[in-house]
Picture 1: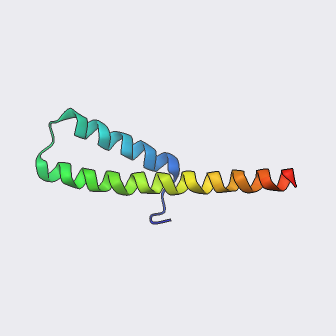
Picture 2: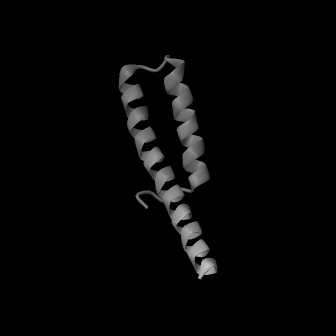
Length: 65
């Protein structure tokens, strides 16, 4: 995992970033920084989800065997 942060914490921070960007009241430079952080957080969330999906798939294949 690229950064040690829980799925829940990453999702919560990402939600806050989206709200700030959607408000439109953020200067351009800060918007770019927020966007970059949001991209990293989205990737972290996807890593967590992919890992969970792989665990479920492995568990299913074990029970089906």
